[in-house]
Image (cartoon, rainbow, N blue to C red; front, side, top):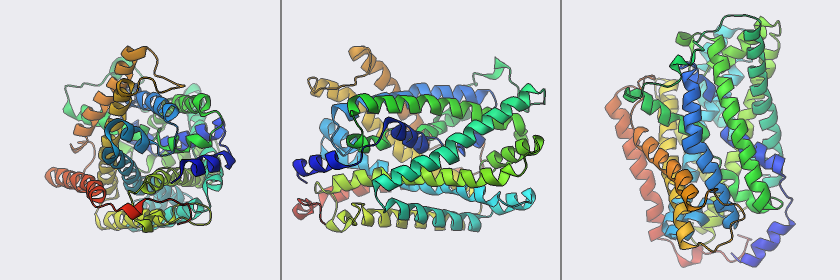
Length: 481
């Protein structure tokens, strides 16, 4: 694709503001569904969040800012890794980013199904419906394909709807949860976890605690996704870092206080992986005589999931289209509609999601399916992040004179500390992600590990095969395919 054509088109596109990009990043990363998974650990969950923020979220955000402003051309992670290690690994990186988010879609959409189930007046029935895997599968498919339909309308429409849905369905409900829980505690009501800092640092001699710490990384994944939109931001060298730093701060705060809010309201032995957030809202609203707000919040949370899905559908799929046009994807996958949206890639993506949902409906437990798919997604995602951290380090040596309006602070020492911590944390989390968590029943541990290993190897081989058999006529010289 001609650089001049892409540059001219970028300049005529509607710009994304700092606030919009920050909300898109928050919507991409923050999912209120994650609160329940950590709430049973009480004050210890705060340590896990801070740990994951220090060794993963903050390094990802800062490294992505340097890479995106130093190499602001479209392509995101593909462009960065290709500059460092060549196009073969750049293609692997963008493929892993796209595939990991695709595999991850059903897990976050299960939460949308739970939210919609809690619209009913009978909480017992709502909980039973939310646990039904066939109901969950149907909701996942309906919401996902609806989000795909919106994404086909173009980036401008998708960004507006995603930002609005993220505000209404993620940011505002998160603030409401934390505020009401704070008032609840301030009024002298009992809390269901020990707030003493004595249990703040977990016992890492217990191997299961290491596995748990690694699993939290997925909650913070995605901060680099919207880097593919860096050319649609006014003054990206200044505004892109501002947007992701603001998003990072809000993300850590809302995860910590949201999780503690659920731990406050629901006893540890009653916490459920996918339902407890909605139960916590119902209990808080009932306590303050606002029971009618439960249904409103359930709808808002479902909208929040929709906004998150739209933001993520629009990001990695746009990135892999840009890469595909450089000769890495068959022409059939490069087709775009009248809005310039990668329609065939979205259809392929939808096929994968649909297949995963069918598998999820076959497995006997929604929680087991949720955990297994989540772990496969985090393994593939972490492989991509390992390449990201290696790239930012290597490019400082390979291309030291390339202008970087934003650079990691502290010179080369700061580079090695920030990117090095992120790299080591990602490698550790990658290895530990193959271990079944003792806190969640996943059936046979050996079968669980085998599925993850086979899935990881199988998916990683695919881009190398595509790269090896690519054809010259896959290189696109026009945008009208």
